[in-house]
Length: 236
Image (cartoon, rainbow, N blue to C red; front, side, top):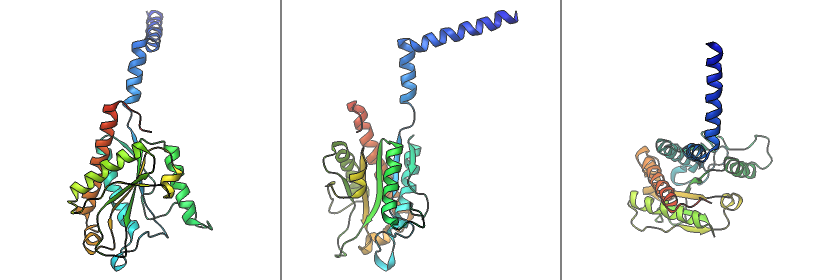
C-alpha cells in the first residue's frame, strides 16, 4: 500500500512536469510571471547635508520631497505596484567621509535605478525662481525618450488638473539633468511647485496638498501604464 502510494505521487509529479513543459503549461507559467508586481522607483530628491531649494522663510525642499514621495509610494502600492524608494529618511545617499558627497549621492541614485530595472522612475523635486509670482508644477523627461515624454505628459496633465493650475505648463524635454542623462529606461523629474512663490510654499507644507500632488502623479502613472499595456508595447 505504502509503495503504491509513493509510486502514484512520483507518476503525478512526472505528469505535472510534462504539463509545464507543454504549450499550455508554459502559457500558464508565463501568466504567473506577468502577474508579478511591477516595480516603480520613487526618488526623493536631495537629503542630508543637501537641502535642495531653500525658499521663503528658509523652507527646505528635501523634507517636502520626502513627504510627497511617501504618499506617492502608498498610492502606488495600493494599486498593486512594488515601490522602491531611493531614500526613506533625511539622510543623503553618500558616505560621511566622502570628499564629494553630492556627486556620490547622485551616482548612488543612478545605481539603485539601474540595479532595480524598474518599469519607470519618478524623481520628486521643488522649483525656485527669482520672480516670486512664478508658480506651478513642471515635469521633465530626457530629450529623445518617447516613453519618457509620454509619461511626462500624462503626469503633467494630471498635476495641472488636480492642482487646478491657472496657467498650465507642458512637459519639457531636458538633456542636461544628471539623473535623466545617466540612467536608462523611463525617468521623469517632477517639480510639484515653487518654494519661492508664497502661495505654493504655504500649500506645499500641508499634508492635504502633499497628498494631492502625490495622487495626481499616481493617476498620471496609472494612465501611462494602462496606455502602454493597451498598445501591447514595452516600456523602454
